[in-house]
Amino acid sequence: MTIPPDPIARSLAPGIAMTSAIFFNAGQLGRFTYVTGRVRELTREAREMGRLPPGPGDRERFASIQAQVSALAARATMIRRTIALVYISLVSFITSILLLLGYALFEIRTATGLPIVAFAAGLVMFALATTRAVAEVALSYRTVEEEIRSSLYEKTQDEWSSPEPARRKDAEPRATSPKG
Image 1 (spheres, rainbow, N blue to C red):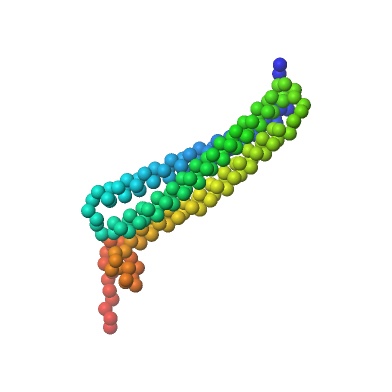
Image 2: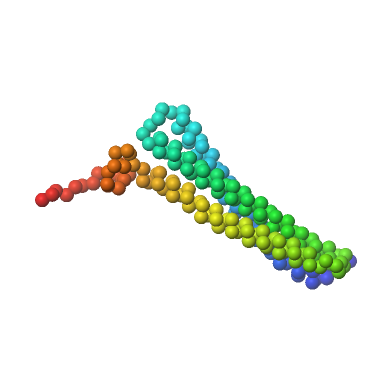
């Protein structure tokens, strides 16, 4: 028994969509791995801080770690839900392909709209996953802002009261011009 070329051509759209979802999902899995790894690094740093005698700036660094871990945990949750939506879309695309194949093999002429419904469901889930990924990228900037704030603009307590901007600790002292 041979399958006519028309059902094969019809199954290309779900197949292409499925390939796109697979590549998108691979990227999301990579993001999830990075975010959870960063959480582990930060929590390890916080644990090490607790083992040592407190030093200058430890309280600020610990607060920064808490803020970053909180934002990263929210990102990890968003990514995990995005991945779940992608898997649902993949199931929908595969279902669409199998229905088209079944209709062609068994010459079924009833409920021919099911592959379209399955494909549409997959597209909706994939669109939702994409939207969530965009929201996660926006949220990721919060972590970056906190890292910048805590690393590049750290000030000692005395510097907080000074109107001068913070300088790197290893920066050369500024030359002052004589008043004259």
